[in-house]
Structure formats: C-alpha cells, structure tokens
Image 1 (cartoon, rainbow, N blue to C red):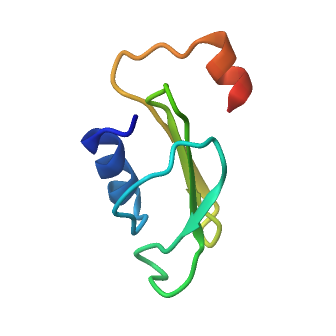
Image 2: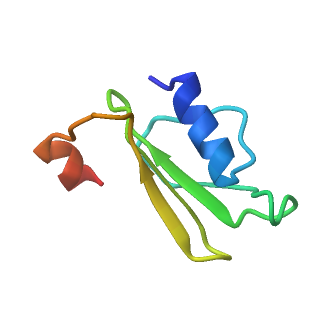
Image 3: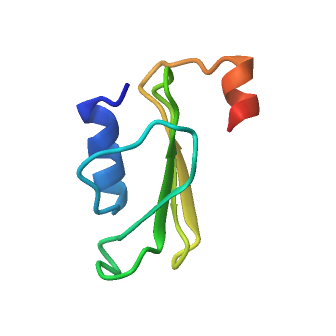
Length: 79
C-alpha cells in the first residue's frame, strides 16, 4: 500500500521514481544527482507505511514514516 505521501517522500529525498514496489526488496533507482545511474535505492513494505531509502553516492540513508506513526517490533526487525 503506497501512498502519495510515501512517493513524495522518496522524490523529496532525491530519488527519481514514479511508483514504488512494496515487496520488501532493495530497488535501485536513479537520483537527482545522477539521473542516468542507479545510485539511489529504496525498500518499501506491504502493509506498512515505512520507507527506507538511500543514495550510495552520498552515503545518506533515511527511514521515513508518517508523523506520529509507531513502528511495531516486527517492523523494526524487518528493517
């Protein structure tokens, strides 16, 4: 279940994505800094609004979740 907010968070982070796959796998994508490469990555989870993303070129990673969202213990383990 991907929301527009999750997609906006990925795009604001600098990932060049039009949709997100929620299979818990790492997906390599282009970034604003390197639009022809695949230095960006994200992991989205089915049934969870948590989105983990990063940029291998800059070394920056971020775990995004909606405001006031409390992750379950299982979500923490999965991430």
